Length: 141
Image 1 (cartoon, helix red, strand yellow):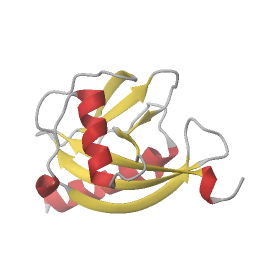
Image 2 (cartoon, helix red, strand yellow; image 1 turned 90 degrees about the vertical axis):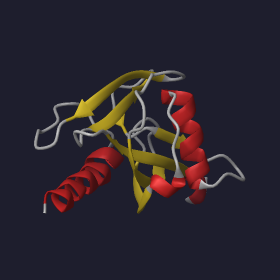
Image 3 (cartoon, rainbow, N blue to C red; image 1 turned 90 degrees about the horizontal axis):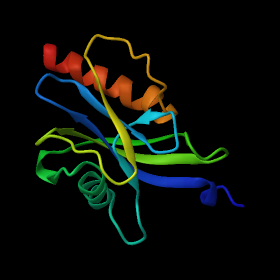
């Protein structure tokens, strides 16, 4: 298997509410909490994939005009050993109340300035949380 086929292209959201809490989800069949989002289908753009995933998994809508592209990041896949996720991350303010659906088993809110005791996916732990904390620092200035 080539290096490219061991990568999973995803789009994910740093989704915060009015209190600056960060929304995480746990999908069925895993212990790992991660950003809402999912795989980018063939012919689909990253933000289109994220919009679809947020609608399917949480009943939320997303607007590209309200989103901030945070960058592209790679990390070991939490649920597929030997694979890497290649993720486009977007920061969005929550508009509406998330309603877990599809494969979402549980949601959790991380509070600003509070350490997480949740089991976190590598992308969340290594990239999303540092980005979120950096955004909180920018807001507080």
